[in-house]
Amino acid sequence: MDANEVSAAVTIDPAWSAQLRDNWLNLMALAVMGEVKSTRMGATSRMRKRLLELGEKLRSLIADRAWIPHPREQVKNALGSAYSLKDALLQFERAAQDADGGADYAEFAEGVLALHQCLLAHLPDLENRWAGLLDSQYDEDADDED
Figure 1 (cartoon, rainbow, N blue to C red):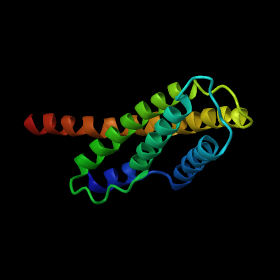
Figure 2 (figure 1 turned 180 degrees about the horizontal axis):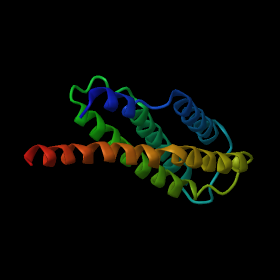
Figure 3 (figure 1 turned 135 degrees about the vertical axis):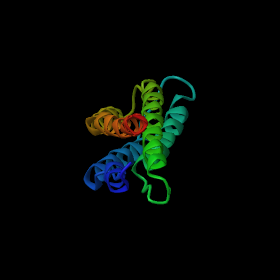
Figure 4 (figure 1 turned 60 degrees about the horizontal axis):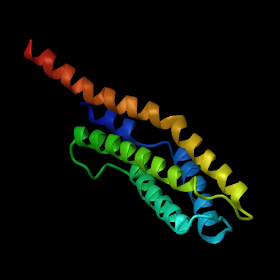
């Protein structure tokens, strides 16, 4: 695996990263400081917890991977972070469905959709690129054996 190609592949676009961060921060402000309510007991606390977990996974995705010495491990780490992020997004969205009222509910619901769309606008392409890099390593191994 070419180290420069891997470095370019696992470096997340700073503009997209900033957009994701802004969307998440907006949701966090609404969820914690805004008026987003639920008729189900404990639902808003669960939703906030899931949103925090989503932020942690988001941070993992956009993190610099230069500290990981082997290019293959950098790609595996990026791909694993993407899968964990998608799972955290799903868990958060499930928890957010229980939010059903409050003065900031409409803005919160729009924010959930905005984050979802922003994330999935680029993540599948990145996952395919990273999976392709991993697959290419096996193609190279097979060529070496011939």
